[in-house]
Image (cartoon, rainbow, N blue to C red):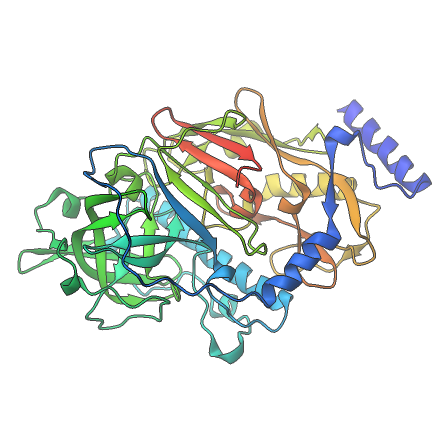
Length: 486
């Protein structure tokens, strides 16, 4: 500990005597390219979304759900598909953060229900878990905002029709909107028509898939499903099996999914959702995937990447054990042992990130949450360590859930302390600066992109995952993080 404080004193003295932004040794610092990230932020506002392709997908191979072939899908960011016409970049950021708060509430609600052994059927589906003011970010031209930040183009039915679906590692049930709609939200693609597919097959109430649903009902012998999310969104309809196509790499028959006739909430834009969680009804479980991986590109880049099933993990991956929580099988828990800032391990009690005997606590890796959430005590320690090492930077007012921000408008680039995650086995995943210092306006205000949570659950979010191929080796219970693999 004495060595730690001595290092800080040396750092502070160095900063006061020179104009250099070097904080410790180069291996413990990294450069934030301010001019590049601000240029990207300004460009995304004028980015023209892609027009969805409506042609029937070509299928190279058709397989049963018992095989484990390689599948690959294009992965797109929200801004490359849907133009919300934000007047400025700060408004865009605030809308992202509002969606993110709703997302985190949804995950925490799901966990609490499991810990308290509360059945979803005991809740009214439109019960909201967030305050109206959390979603009151200005949106021009009445354009609605939807949940989900990354989307894949997936074919459904025979012949296959393509749809944009939200990628979600925090959910299990796959679903899409279906005709006839009693209440459907606006989506980019035409709504799926079951009568146009020869492979549409309603499930019976006594089917195993129906029995695995958290909320189900029976009507005329057919299974009905309902999924309610903690942000007040829900989908209700028939539970069926359909053929799902993965671009040109093949298709899988009889994948159980919801055909939603009443869908309300924050899903505007996407046709539905791909559940990639660990439960038996998720897409990964149904196609018997031994592994899956994704690489999430920077949301301001306008680029795309891939979602892959059964592809080998990159050899340079930083690996960590995947853990099981007996109370909830959806989430992907990882054995996080700590964090470091500028090469110094932050003092955090070891039990902070552990799953306790009741199933509470722990750390999950999630594709749908944007900003990493740490338990308040851990967050405060990490934030304070970062602030101590960035006293040379001009502070700025906090923005939304960010309490540590900087005015970097006069700089082209800056060297900042590296923030790293540490996993069991002395494995270290060092983040690039752009994954934890992000612009919140186009004028040069940057904020430290971590946030505290009063919940016992910590979440590694997609801003921290950007540019990294995250591989879930389900067969060996390992998750890998491989930088620069998009």
